Length: 390
Ligand code: NAD
Ligand code: MG
Image (cartoon, rainbow, N blue to C red):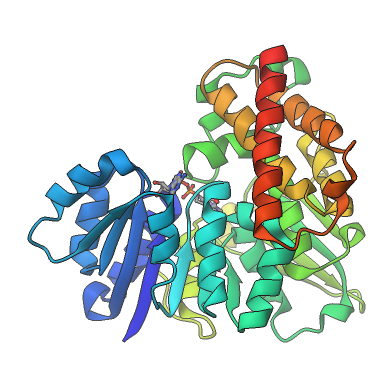
């Protein structure tokens, strides 16, 4: 029986993963080791009972008593806190889903990789903050990383059986988000509700806002660079409002392979779950006759400065990815709290990158977790200071 763990089980990707596991037979077909979540204790406990997990972990110490109550008499271990989540990643599991949101997903993913596990990686922030470290860790231990971002799963599938040296171009698509056709002036006044209303994908709140600002695509450009080790000049993005073509890979003979599917994350999750085979995944089937139109356009770099900032990070590498992501997380917190306007998010990230660039240490390759964590904290401190100044 295959053993699995889900980090971030109660989130949008976590729920979709749970749904697929359940449809594949749940506790009869899989041995569930660890499930982790945040404050939604009722849901975490429900999932743990249904999958008969070995341990359920909440990220918050103050939630431990309620998790203990909810799981009393079930024989399921309960734990709380960031270190408990990291330790849960040391427990043997064949397949581990990394679906915590933000930089908090880095440590458990890294720990699973050290043990040589197969890591289904939805947490793109780990590749952005510590791409070199993550890839080197996987190589050393013989672990497998399967990308669970729709675009990266698409590129991965298009590259299967191909020689990476024959790749001329990798293009990841972007829906363009809710503000695709808005003017710069209108975007400047965008509200939280408008930013969360994604036109084609149903996702968690934070990633939905990142899609509106195209910070999500910016993270994904960096993710592509780190995961596939492709030169930034060969990586591009195209706005494709229908979200049907997820990525395109162009080869030296002029051929282009495009990956298509309905916008449903269960495809990428299901692909990673069945890999290296193709299993049955219950997503809606693509009907191109019905969709009729697929359109593409270049993104507007003035409206979406996050893309330009990502280009700088892709060429500089070092600790710049960690700084970029941390500053973005702080800026996003402040936008959600209503303290800054939508375009200020990019301004804060840019200013944070400028301020750290005075320090040459940020340009060195990030080989140690401690260096990444230090760069992450420093960037959070600087970004917070910039918000206060503004
Ligand atoms: P979400 O906000 O819906 O869920 C996040 C999960 O992480 C929850 O279980 C939450 O309790 C947990 N969590 C949050 N903060 C935590 C912390 N500090 N420590 C431990 N656990 C914490 O997020 P999501 O939309 O499911 O996204 C998860 C990851 O997948 C992100 O990295 C996102 O970029 C990536 N991703 C999501 C989608 C999508 O469709 N939602 C698509 C592609 C990639
Ligand atoms: Mg994506």
